[in-house]
Length: 550
Image 1: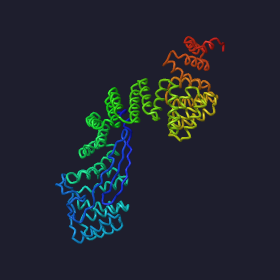
Image 2: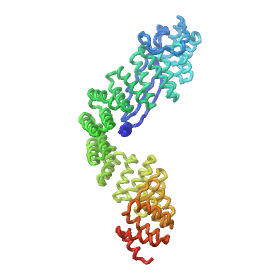
Image 3: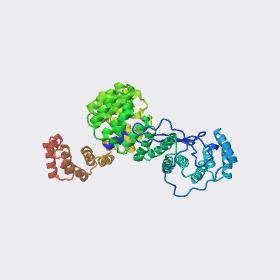
Image 4: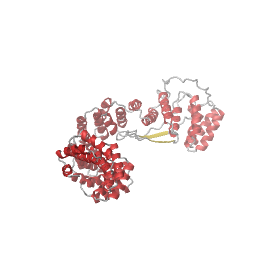
C-alpha cells in the first residue's frame, strides 16, 4: 500500500524566492507541497541586524544576539585567518556604512564597506557588511567572494555558510546550498537566537524537501518543532516527512497530538487516513475520515474528506459504497466539481450511465473550462448512443487545449462516434490522431475496424496488429485474422486462429474462420473438421459453409 500512500501524498512543489532587506540577512521564503501541501512556516523569521560599532569584537555574534557559550560545533579543519580588531576610526566608518545600508543607499554602503576592507582586511565585519550590500545590488558573485573571506576570518560563525547557501540556491546549485545550510545549522548550535535558528533550519528543510531526503527532513523538522512546540503547521510537516520517509506509524503520535490541539484540521485527518492506508488498514482509514467529517467547520472540507473516503472504498472494490460517499461529498458541497466528476466516474463504472450523465453535466456546468470533465461527459454520451452530442463535447474539449492524455481520449471518443454513424473517413482521421498522441490498444482496434469497413484491408491489418501488440486480446486477434483473410494472407490468418482455438476450444467464430483459412489453402479435410467444430458450437455460418458445395 506504500504506492497508494505516495500517490495520495502528491509530488513536491518547491517555490524559492530570495531577497534582502534593511538590517537583515538574506531571507528565503519557501512553499512546498506533499499530499495536500507539505506546509512551511507561514512566515519565515528574519535574522537580526548587521553589527553595530559597539560590537566590533570579532568573536561577538554578527546577528546581535547576547553572548553565548562556546559552540559545540567541531573545530574547522584549517586554522582561521588572523583577525585584526577595528580601530576607533574604523568603528566610526563601520557605523557610517551601516547607516547607509539601513537607509537602502546600497551603492554608498558598498563604497564605505570597501574602504573599510582596504583599511583592515583582517576584520570580518566589513567583509560581511560588504557582502550584504553587494547582495542588495544584485552582485551575487562579489557577495560570495566577500562571504568566503568572512568565513576564513570567522569560521565558527553560521552567518557565512548560511548566506553562501542562499547564493548557491539562487544560482541553481541546490546540492551546494544543502551542504552550506547544513554547516550553518551545525555552527549555530548554542550561539544563535531561536529566531535565527528557525530561519536556518527552514532553509535547510526547503533543500531537503527539494532533494526528497525525507529522513533528513524529519530530523530537521524535529529540531524546528522543538524550537516552537506550539507551531501546529510545523508539527504537521513533521508528520508528513516521517510518512514519506516510510515511518508512517512513527508519525501517528504527533499527528494525534496535533488533532487533539486542533481537531478541525482537514489536512491532518487526510494524512492520518493515508498512514492507515499505508499500513493496509483501509477500514481504519475510513473510520478516521468519518470522525473528521463531524469535526471540520467548512462544507468544502467535509466534501474533501468524503471524497477521499470514496477513493479508498473504490480502491478496495466497493464501488457501491464509493458512489454513496461521492454523492455525500456532493451534498456537502454542491459546488465541488471534483466530487461531481468523481461521482460520475464511479457511476459509469457501475454501468449507471444516466446517473453518470447527470453528475458529469453538473461538473461541466461548474467547471466549463475543464477538458477532462468535458471529455468524460462525451464518453458517457457515447455509451448512451448520443453520438452527435458526444462529438460536440469532444470539439469543445479540444478547443481547451488539454494535455496529451485528455486530447487522445477526446479524439478516441470522436472517432468511435463517427464509426458508429458510418462516417468512416472522420473515424479514421480522429482515431489516427488519437493513437499518434498516445498509442493505445483499444484505439488501434477501432482504427482497424474503421479501415476494414472502408475495405482498406492492408491498413486494417497494420492497425489490428498494433492493437494485438499492445494488448493481445481475443477480440484484437480475431479481427486481425479477419483482416488477414480479407487480404488473402491465409497462412498468417491460420496461425493466429490456431492459437485462438488452442487457448479456447469453444471459440466458435475462431473455428469458423480457421476453416475458411484452411479451405482457401485447399486444405479441404482440415477445413471440414474446423467447420464441423464451429457448427457443433452453434455457428450458423459454419453450417451454411458445410452445406455449400463450394
